[in-house]
Image (cartoon, rainbow, N blue to C red; front, side, top):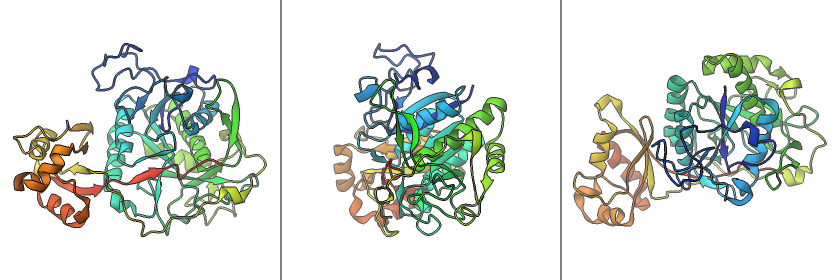
Length: 403
């Protein structure tokens, strides 16, 4: 069995295209309000909600997807890879907004539950991937230790990702997917890049599951519709070769990409998935509604009172050691630190901890919540030699929005 994580706005768990293809946590009892398997998530029978740190709730609008985007994406995968199982993870709200660090919660949950392919349809354009080294580290560990294939929509900004980066599409190890029109050329809204976009797949007026119904389908356009076709291909490879390494899956994928003069300077492979591997585009939508302005590369990062650290293994620090340091060994002011993924740490600060960090020297050198002097704070944290790197969190949205 190949399990595919859809990291998105959730999934309508009762849609007829989805219901028979859902992953099921056999160690969890539905609806009893308990964490039966002891993994920190209550009632996570069919997925995970990063906003609640619990199972994906059917009482959300439309039985698990109040936005509709994730259901449309999932329906593409179930259509092209019907033997795969879908594990939906909600990290974007009903408006398609979220924070980048929640991707780590999503990925860690997915890998803890045996997922081998992760589809990502969110992003931020502008800041270079080096600002988010925690994502590269997470992908590296995921590929090496868990044999996970990471796939991302390239974005819908009509942007050259070689010049203005898109995250997570540009993060090393991520397979970045652009969208083609019905004539096989790059869709007018699709991001592209001869170095940073790997391949294309159809992305205009794609028919898939409508989250606002239990049976109907609707047409949407975007690189979000192209990426799950590549995800489905990877899932089908793993159904036949369950022990295949991510680079083997990637090699087979690129081999199947049909090269085209229209795409040769738009992606590293110069090609697109076609034929039986995809759902074809139909008549193109109004491109004036499809285009979005790419944000500039000078857009500031947004701090949300959290930071992300990658534990420095070279210093022999365990997660418990770092937790003790950050908790100053004497206070419970910091909210419980969750270690959701190997050596990746993401945590939030409570109001008392923020106040204490500003007023007590010892705490000030352990806990940082004040964004006004971010550069100095980063230097201080790095000076502790507890982390290889520290980055501020960033706001993300469905930069791969539907049209």
